Structures are given as structure tokens and as C-alpha cells.
Amino acid sequence: MKWPTWQQAAIAAVVSGVTAMVLAHRRRTTGRTTPDFGEALATEFALISALYSIWRIARKLPLAQDVGAIQRARTIVDVQEAMYLPSELSFQQFILDNDWLGWPATLYYALLHVPMLIGFLVWLFIWHRDQYPHWRNGLVFLTGTCLVIRFWRVAPPRFLTDLGYKDLSEIFGPSIYGPVGTGVSDQFAAMPSIHVGWAAVVSFGVVSVSESRWRWLALLHLIITMIVVSATGNHWWLDGIVAIMLLGVGLALDTAFRRRGKPTNTGSRAAEFDQVSTASGVSSNS
Image (cartoon, rainbow, N blue to C red):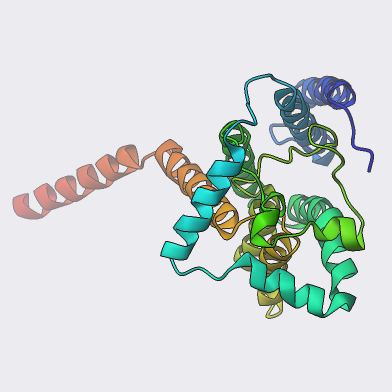
């Protein structure tokens, strides 16, 4: 699977950023205060492209060491057992016993998480523009923190073959991974799960924003993703749980900053108080 390089993303960010500035200048010269669709789209595309470029660059930084990744994975197994979480191995064995599920599961893992996220952002930007910044900021916080945490190396279940785990992508295909150190994704960056985090953005975002009675079906994307990432041997349950918690923190911080940034009504309240005082004074003097 070919993904854009960081250079291509950086070029796209620059071109989109320049386009946004030109459109903003034209808007100001005409006296308009609100950005039109083209300017807003160029601005958002520049931001997303720049963040993607940074993500690809960070992956190449020699800050992470693979040493200890397997042992940390074993620690997660112990923690999950202490928490009485279901074993990923049971889901994987179920798919192996029902092998007709193998190819759809690996396909879902490999191909759907990015298109679903892009589709959600496009839908949100076009039809619910007022809600777009909130969920975009939550997404940025989630992805950024995952990018930092990834330097604390954790192996996914498929590397613990002594416990019985297998890489279902190698059995059923398709696989987005090659040998360790190749491919677009980091194989020792299981914690937290970007797959689950992005699925949570889509599912919770649709439920929160949409008014359709069918919106609750969007939760199936998150549920299926959590099952698929564990059953295919690509993530631990805790990887997904931590990702969902990070999204919650990001959304809460965005809400808090927005409330803090709202102008207060002190002036209007003072004016109302003066009017009440004046009226009271008039009444007492009459």
C-alpha cells in the first residue's frame, strides 16, 4: 500500500497554505469577515497535510529502541489478566475456527480505518461545520499523544508466538506490514492503538453530531475495529482503551479552552444592574 511521503505532504501543506492566504487576502479586500468554503477548505487541508508530514518524519527519528518491546507486551498480558479482560487469543481462535471470517477481518484492519476517518471529516466539514473544529482538535490531540507514546515500545500480540498468537494477515492477507522497520506503520508501536482511536473519533463523532435515529449504528465501527485489531494479533485491549481515553481528554480540553475563551457578559450585566439601580432610585424618590 503506497502512502504519501512526508515530502509530498509538506508540498501539499505549503500549496494549500498559500492558497488559503491568497483567498483570505481577497476576502479582506472585499470587506468580508467570514471565510468562504474554499478558504476554509484550503486552511484545513494545509493543517492536516502538515500534521501528516510531521507524523511521517517522527517515524524516522532514531529515538525509539526496540529493546524491551516484547517484555512490555508480556507485562500488558499480566495487567489485562489482573483486570479480567477477555483474551485476544480467544477472538483469534474463533476466526481461525471460522476461517471464512479471516479475510474480511484482515481487510477491515488494513483498509477501512483511514477512509472512514476521511469520510467522517468531509461529512463533518460540509454539513456540520460548527462542530468540525471540536472533533478535529480531539483528533489532533489523540494522534499527537499517540505519536509521543509510540517511542515507549510495545510489541503487538502477533509477536508473542509462544503464547499461541499468530499474524492473521500472513495467513489470510492482505498485510500492511513487511519485515520489522519497513512499511508505513511502526510494528512495535502497538500502544496506543491509532486504529481504535480513529474509529472512536468517527463513531462518537457521528453519534454526537448527527440527529438521525440511525446514528447509533456508527458505534458498530468502533466495536468491530476493537474486535478486529485484537483478533488479527495487531493490538492488545489496553491499546484501544488508552486510545479512547486520550480522545476523551483531548475533547475535554478543547471544550474547556472554548469555554474559557468565550467573552463574558460582564458589561451587559453591569448595564442591567445600573438600570435596576436607577429604576429602584426612581421608585424610591417618587
